[in-house]
Image 1 (spheres, each protein chain N blue to C red):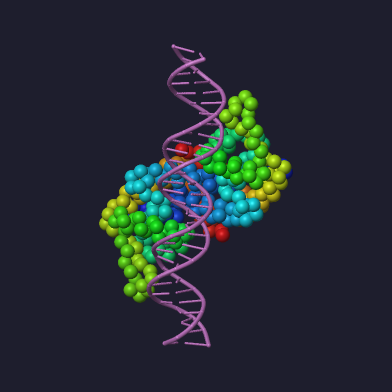
Image 2 (cartoon, rainbow over the protein chains, first blue to last red; image 1 turned 90 degrees about the vertical axis):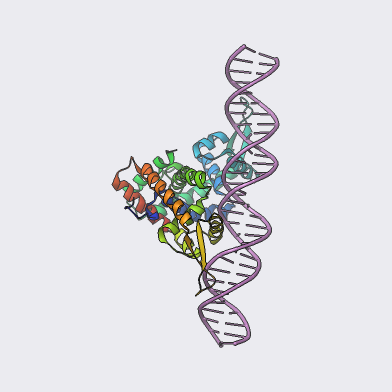
Length: 145
Length: 145
DNA sequence: CAGTAATAGTTGATTTTGTAACCAACAAGG
DNA sequence: CCTTGTTGGTTACAAAATCAACTATTACTG
């Protein structure tokens, strides 16, 4: 990425990833924070339930690669706000099944629409192939660990 | 990014950016954290000074898009560790010029080598064109705000 | 110049995250 | 069964990020 005696931060992929991610997140965050006072962790939990239906906290953690304490706190907040319901699993009484309440679904539907719009806005200016390639590269990068 | 009634988190660019950025950062962080007990903010300040030479805190903030409190605290830590020197600007006595001490440069050189290696490792598996395109797209995304 | 606004940087209070210890429920082996 | 180990999830405490208020200095305006 550099010649002998230079180092260009603007070419360093982890740095670029952070800059781009921060910019996009900060920007997008204003919507769910402003509208529903939600944090990013909460947004993520809400979306996982909106998309995949019922899940346990652990499953969400595995999928989203979030630490369980983050999820625990997000679940608490979302439950307080009546966005999600928790039901103990009778087969294994340690875990509970989480799902959206009707209220939660309304919020999810709203934020989902915004997310789609935002994604569209973010990727306009790039060709379809470029966006496709970007997505697959980001997925690949997210796997490495 | 989605059909009528589906939403795929795995295609949502802000989410992908975050996942990839978090993965890369967490991974890479272990080096400078483990070796020098440095935080990401400190790493960034160190690198800006290593690359661009003398700068003021505000300039770093503008370039790196970091809030000034983060920089202020990072500068304190780095100064305590004797990695950087601060000199008041005589023309404008509010600001100070920051630069690396010889010790700081040793650390920078070390971490810079690691960064280059890490970047290489991260991007192997992708074609050169793809990486180039990725970088330029990430730069573009980082600009939007 | 005096007075007000703007800028560089710091500090303190609040919020959020990360780390580790913890409790309750289950699993497996003797 | 009973001990030991594991897993799902919570809680307490420490580290860090965010936000607002503050000091010191410079810039602008009448």
